[in-house]
Amino acid sequence: MIPYGRQDISEEDIKEVVDILKSDFLTQGPAVPAFENAVAEYCQAKYAFAVNSATSALHIACLSLGVGKGDLVWTSPITFVASANCALYCGADVDFVDIDSKSFNMSVVALEEKLIKAEKHGRLPKVVIPVHLAGQSCEMDKIYALSKKYGFRIIEDASHAIGGKYKNKAIGGCQFSDITVFSFHPVKIITTGEGGMCLTNDPQLAISLNRFRSHGIVRHPSEMTNIPHGPWYYEQIDLGYNYRMTDIQAALGLSQMKRLDQFVAARHNIASRYNELLQEEWLDLPWQHPDTYSGLHLYIIRVKKNKLGITQRQLFEKLRTAGILVNIHYIPVYLHPYYALKGFDCKEFPQAELYYSEAISIPMFASLTENELKFVVDAIKKPSGHQNLF
Ligand SMILES: *Cc1c(COP(=O)(O)O)cnc(C)c1O
Image (cartoon, rainbow, N blue to C red; front, side):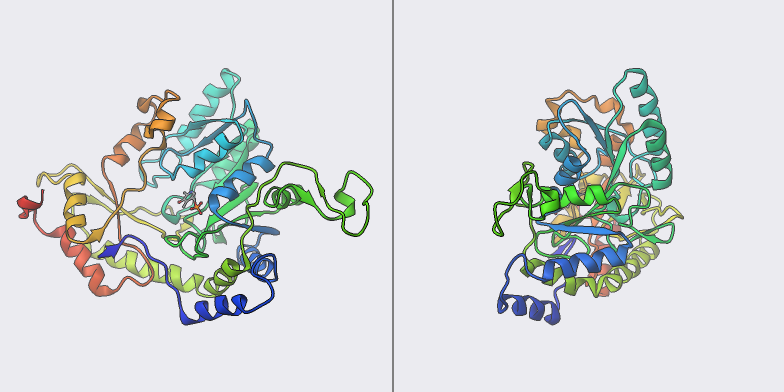
């Protein structure tokens, strides 16, 4: 079996975690701030807050930007459901912006058209959440310019993209956004088991992200409403959550950070091999915008209409039967029954619809071997003689 993604855990990673298990703190000790500092420094962001998942990170990012009932949040339809659910957790409404046909990221053209219409109807979004699909940054300079013109805030869902760059700067530096979110789920570029992080350069947002991840409690007298009752005193001043990361997880994350550049470089080598070996007129390979250096979480091919009559579904089934655990990233969010109830019109998203009928994510992870890679390539290219498999 070859999965589409897999974590890479070294002996050193294991030792770092075991050291924490033998230490005084399993949570709220020194490992979490050490991990946060390492990521903030790598990304050149002023503040970083580790949490227990990217889903939690997206939730507190929305809360910190004041998303609430009656507000509107826009994201890409080609994403994991968490990019949209975060707005619903806050009582806001969600809408989607169609994708670009080449990058599969939120289309800036579609975004601008939708903003013009929304302004006419007096229903502009409060927050837009561009998703860096497969690890490739969205066109953040253009989205940022639109945010200034139309007055919305930006959360980058960079769950796929740690280790990637945009205009030669590390993704996560929030140069063109208010908050950036990373995921450390095992299929992503680095892992903490479960885990996520919010990065920002804004001191006000930093205070509020920190509060929301831990019950809305404050411990410094300057943040309190009352005069402290005594040295034991703390106050809850907002309704927060327990979204904290443990020191056990942070130790793994910190150890993984040391190999982040290696992981991404290995992913680029694998992508180059696929690019060489999968030159077929019926396949579209991932296009890279010249402003980007992708984290390459995913390698997404598109099965175009072809004389051989091979469809996306046939190729998908053939690869799964061969033990290659390909996947589709993603089912357009508006097609999920929970969202469909809200009455989205799929005709509004022609590029997302076409993408969903063509895309397949093939195995992409740092430890994929040359033999495994060749096996995947052969399975894709083998003439469709295996009628019995279809
Ligand atoms: C994985 C992922 C998430 C959620 O991450 P978790 O850490 O599993 O909560 C959110 N958005 C995107 C685009 C993802 O791929």
